[in-house]
Length: 214
Image (cartoon, rainbow, N blue to C red):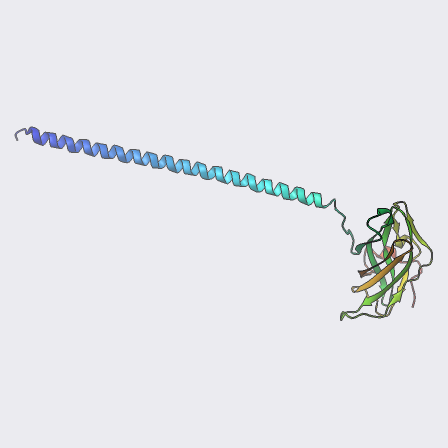
């Protein structure tokens, strides 16, 4: 076989082009691998940033929740209501956890606490039970056995006083009643309050020594 320079040169050029293509492919693969690594690192950074953001939001939400607990709220099953001139805080009576506790159908006692920065007294309690069908029942007028005075920011708990008895054939535990409280200075306020079952905890201990009778 004879040596042909032109043929040798051609083979050399093909080999060089083949090696160049292989080098280019390896370079492309390396660049692709680097890009994938960069993408993975970027994804990991994004996930970490997202986790930090979520954690921050949860911390902020938790902080908000804790802040909200410093606001006035009803800790029991009764209702809160204020009566008086809001422009003069000393004239406002704050009624908290107002309810009627009933140990037997047809009767109950008024429960709740009152406080004011000034001086006032509870003079009357009236109301109307709401029957199971949503209509109004027979009205009631509370019996206040002694003056309920409140002053100087000292809280008065109504069930710690001689009981204010209310009677109506439509008073029944589990229902509601429209209750109106009349104060000597602050005026009157009307609200819807629950009628609670006095035979279950924690209201059993509040039963008067002599239960109201029809």
